[in-house]
Length: 633
Image 1 (tube, rainbow, N blue to C red):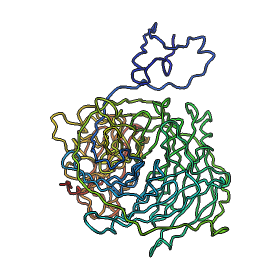
Image 2 (image 1 turned 120 degrees about the vertical axis):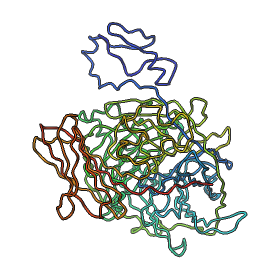
Image 3 (image 1 turned 90 degrees about the vertical axis):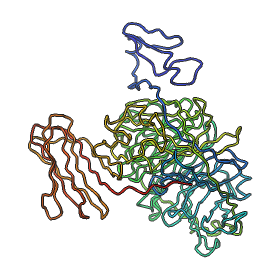
Image 4 (image 1 turned 120 degrees about the horizontal axis):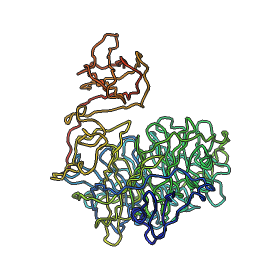
């Protein structure tokens, strides 16, 4: 007996080609340059569970070539995990200094995208490197972090026509250092960042812009004793982000990464306390982690409060601070991994791997393991003890030049690799393949107006002088718990070869590939779906759920799908007064009850098991009117 190794030696670094160079049969293996273990070696070696061999496939792209303004290298992108932008992206260029906003039509391949750019100051231009940006909740203000300054562009305070300019404010808040953390902005326009100055007094900073003028700015800084927040050491291409983010609902909680000490930290700004989770805890045998997990970078939070980060070791790491559960998922191309961006989107996580020119997505599995944080420690406010150290110079008299235009979409198909592993399924799109010349992807954000498994990204190529925005649709072959309705099956493309027909669907009857079955997916409405976990139900037992109708709800659907197609289950729906208003028709294996045009309120539905014990999956659907079609002329 022979054991197939996780990799083979050879000249190529492409994982798909390496895999093709190794084949095995029942009795013997013929593969030049590959290392194998015999039964004797196996008896002396404990091997982890091997991942399934990656499967070659393809991914659909749409890309827009924006005119480069002396800088054809897009960088950080706003990560919108809350759905504030929909068909809009924001990104910043790395060197000459421009902020871009790109508005896309509802049907991406129909009509043009409209772009707007704002210039940064000379103070930002001369510092170079990767910049970070975030926008205010209302998207009026865009904040950009440079190594020495924080800049804000007021996109609604603009004058003139040729050129048109908008107000730009500059805070010179980091004159002593060149580490550049990410930014986080809460709902009150407080701007958070991290920094480690020359004296190694690492801190989290909160900058609150003045309402009347820049001079009214207030700054608070919390000392991270023994911490290392701010610096980020690149593994290869050396753009990287030191992460920081704010909890979406508990905005007194600020999370940050400390790459050199291998920690994720939590600052409670209301209590002036800090605690940390070490990625070293993932080495425990109960975690089942493959390899060393080290070097957390960019950090983002989903709408449920779960954190995700990428690491220099080539992992995607999650942390649920409410339960202390952590997971680690090793990227397929970990040997050449240089991940930059991470973009959680409910059930999937997008990321960019700059060094290998890949945009990827993880469908995570596994419950992870418990990693206990350090006890809360004091985080003294530096500005309270030394107010002079927190005074910053400001300049709110400069103007940002505005440039606008439109650009047409280009539909593309590139190679992709699907790698099903015990801890999840990775799908990576190779942007530099099949003649496409996109390189060094950095920023990435979920496409919230489309189904899960779709992302916007930013790439560039200095040789052909373009700034490029892209959209990727990954082949999502697994069902997800929070599917997002996407009735545009071809992304607006008038294609004979339907874009959604080139791979197997998660559902056999899911033509638009959004994980919502055709019979429950109206092409003229918007379905909001919540799918539960598989749940056991004893013979003769019932289970109770609730669902809510809004004033605009067109229909409520309650669905229970059994794992046994002959199971005898049913659903009863009751209104707030306890009156039975709907029942599922007689069927085996699945029960569906619908309430059309329900009055606003909360409804109760019960699953009844009329037969033997069974496992079933509950699903609720709130059908809403479809948003009007928007095209950019």
